[in-house]
Length: 151
Image (cartoon, rainbow, N blue to C red; front, side, top):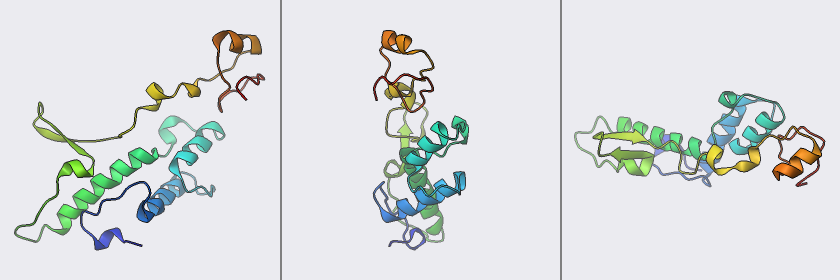
């Protein structure tokens, strides 16, 4: 396994072993009693079954990856700071984007669409069966009514 401290500017993806270890650590930070290793699964369990507020959930896998990439970039700069000159990779490869209008670098928070815009299945259904049918709602993991539509 590659150790992050041994390599400056290492590029991780969601499938790398180091990222899996970091992901498990984040799950433990948010709920040490769960034996989950995926932050997305932990988010689902904590939100749907534990009723934890959105601001108390771990980041999504994609958001966590972006944060880790930014941290790797900043740590890489610091590990090379004693050298007079060194090759600095582009910040764009480490979850930063250049804003020409602002003349500055800004963090990339995620590379996938926001869930509120992309996922209609999170609509909470608390109605009777007839209202579900009228609204053409499918039962979601958040559904608390007695309907069985969509299951």
